[in-house]
Amino acid sequence: REAHEDLVRILDEFHYPPGKTLPPIVVHCFTGTLDEAMTYVERGFYIGFTGVICKKERGAPLREILPHIPLERIMLDTDAPFMGFVKGRRRSEPADVVGVAEEVSRTLGVPFEQVCAVTTANAISFFKF
Image (cartoon, rainbow, N blue to C red; front, side):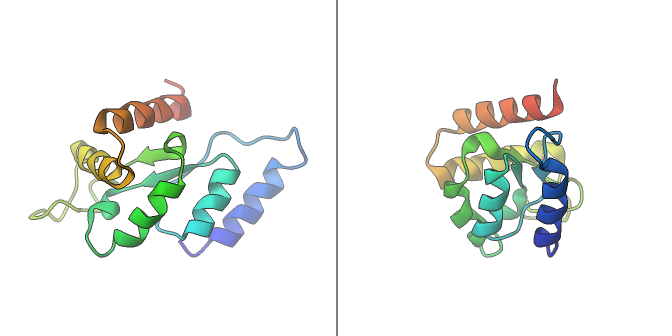
């Protein structure tokens, strides 16, 4: 979270000169700024959003960033069991990713089914299923 500049510098060293490539990269559990997100997207990285986006106050800055990120660069995650975001529970579970997808759908004004289809395709591509 506080290592954005270091991360970009180090990954750029491995990505350049042209022709030198890295495997697909996801910035897991993203909680940074719009500028940071766009730096990653410009490099072809995926941005991982967790249930934090579902939290009213803590998620507000991330929900403002979401419309700027192409859906094809978004990964969904719960960070289960560590980042609980469902009311009444301290922990999350993998099935809670549905709530993350619903929030992305609401925030972007995109059908839930489209969010699921595109982010599933992203995961398949990333993990090479």
